[in-house]
Length: 368
Ligand code: G6P
Image (cartoon, rainbow, N blue to C red):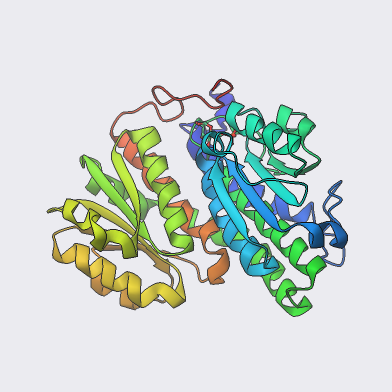
């Protein structure tokens, strides 16, 4: 087992470090020599897309969080309404599904029982099924109409990291492809986003090279009983993933909140020294985020911000700032999640937890 960890202490940190490569592979394997997206055997034509009036993205756990980002990308690029739901809810709520529905299921393992059941339920009502999965030949890949494989490589640690970032890249590519077919974005915009995606792996690398600083922050917060993660827009979805990660592997109670919703109740929970991880990568929401950070800081919170490089203004409302390299706001989630993964990892190690095999959790949940 030690050998397969490739010199790392745990699979999780090995897999965190494999993300530049996973992201790159997922991207380059789907670009032809003219940088057009080729979607393997995915046969969603312009005619098919014109028929589709509703997209559901359905998944569990970390894959569900990727689906929230996917909703944003598809709505923004392809102008189709999208709903993202957890599979265990979707399958029992009698969702409005017919032959004009596209169901995108996201599953690292391709074996999650609830996700598979949601797929079957939607298929029986005539929906077209597109699966994003990491495992070739998995049940979900076999039952879907179309499959988009992530190229993360095997993920061993229970807490998902590289599957998430490759799922994000997949969803962005699907959104771009749909948008080009529907004519809702220009060639110029497409080229720009592809170019930005191509630059993501080296930017992830930069964050990974800075992990000492994140380890120090982990040392500062490791004794906390509770932590909160806040963000707006795409940053809120990453906040949800960050909170899940720290709960899963360090057993610290953590919750994510939409920052604008704090004042409607949750701010009552803020007390002296409680860590609040504030993700503030979105330019158009930045001022609002800073004022939310000031609100919690004024009530004694220990604010750890994640922001884009050069954005010094964030420092006035934070005790610690983790900078990510500058990036197109719409793709920022692929970067902001990396420090949150590292933070969870170091907190878990420092608390003496079983990082790769946390209590009560399974890598793949194949029973309901
Ligand atoms: C389990 C794992 C999570 C994962 C979820 C969905 O709960 O512990 O890390 O996100 O299942 O798994 P899937 O294989 O469908 O992506």
